[in-house]
Length: 155
Image (cartoon, rainbow, N blue to C red; front, side, top):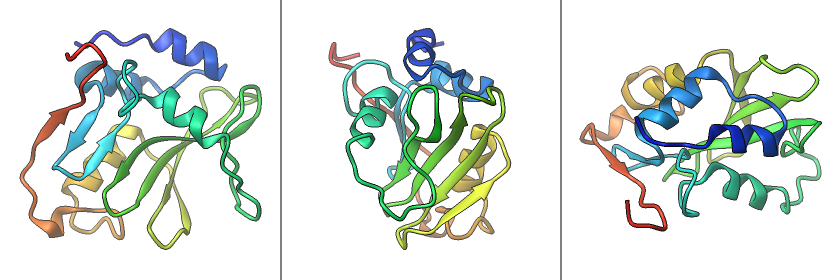
C-alpha cells in the first residue's frame, strides 16, 4: 500500500472522496495505465497529483458548460484521470450531499456523460471493456501495464 495523505485532500476539498478511489490511490498512487490512461493519485509531485490538477482547473473559464469545477463547500467536478485522446474522467462532488457520487466523463468532442458506478468499475471498463464506447481503449491493443508516476523525491 502506498502512503497517501487522503485526509489532506479531503480537508482541502471539504468533502470525502469515495472509498474505492482512496483504495486505488493506496494501491497504485498516480501513474499511467496501458501507456494512455493517466490516474491522478500521487499526493507528491505535480504530474499525477489530484489537488494540483484540481487547483489548476479552478482558473479555467467554463462559461456555458453544464458542470463547473468543484469549489470547497459547493458542487462541481474534480478530474481523477484522463486519456491521451483528451478524454477526461471526473467525480461529481457536492458538499451538501457527501457520500453521493457519480462519474462524469468527457470525450474529445467535449460532451459530458454521467455514469453511476464506482471509480474502479469505470477505470476497469475504460481499460478492458470493448463495448465501453467512446471511452474504452481495448481497440488499440495496448499492453496491460501500469507505470507509476514519480514523486518529487524520485520514488
